[in-house]
Image (cartoon, rainbow, N blue to C red; front, side):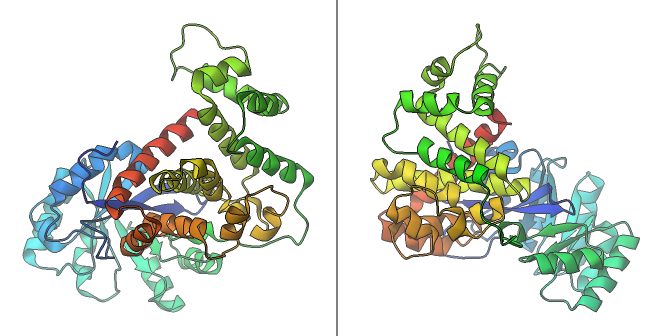
Length: 408
């Protein structure tokens, strides 16, 4: 599905607002897996990057939200930013870009053509101060600035109409500090971290729902079993029928039974949809956690297939699906999976034990976060050609985008 993607590695990092809704995504990219930096290089032109993005689809990459695209000085001065749709992207200048008359002139040109400009890793009092009149967004590294400096810088920037993005926000405590300082957008994986646990046992309803997810994803599950499981849950039955009868399928007649829906859509698709609906209904965190979970599940499944273990596909899908249960449910992961009839390999992997399934999950997480070198090394160890990872990730995004739209 990612024809033309070649060896360009692409990932995305969400940028959330104060209500933890996704505002946009920073698109990370690299020519190959050997360099961890997520920026343009001399052997990757902006045109190649644009073509790579378009091969997946901007809508798929960003779900219709803003795309923050990093540019270094050579790519910027070659008018690389001008190759993108100004309504879809924010041109982000790396902190390594020297502020020269040529750079300032190109930023002014981009601004005049309707592009929004972001300054990455802005340092108060540094050379990038000269570009502030042209910037719509400024990113502040919350780990590099003390609280007083962060607050002072954010207040000054906000007073000029600039939107301040706190980056490297990895914990809830750092999120609180950044909000107090005046930042309105937040970038990092804080939303994937469990915040607090109530100390109470997992509700019986959640246990039953998680057991349903496990049952739906049994490798040998039959159509009759899935039909029976769905019929026991009126809400799931309704959503399956509503989805299959939606305009997206363009059917000429109404589908009235679960069995008919299963025969039409296929067992695999319906059980995955149903699993995602169940998790989304239990989610205690930001909606992006569900999106991240769906991507992990599909990517884990595809890696399992590429390892020559098609029989493990459902198990690895469940591995990714359960990997953020502590965040989704607000309970420690050991407690969240305690009542699930999981395969020993999957259970051990979720609890951090070093086995093949854990390596699959780590490969997926590393790739999602732009640690492509580590992901490539792990994939090779698993017997998966690292060259296949970009296409597998692109296919994952396309699938996840379609599923989230169909199951909305």
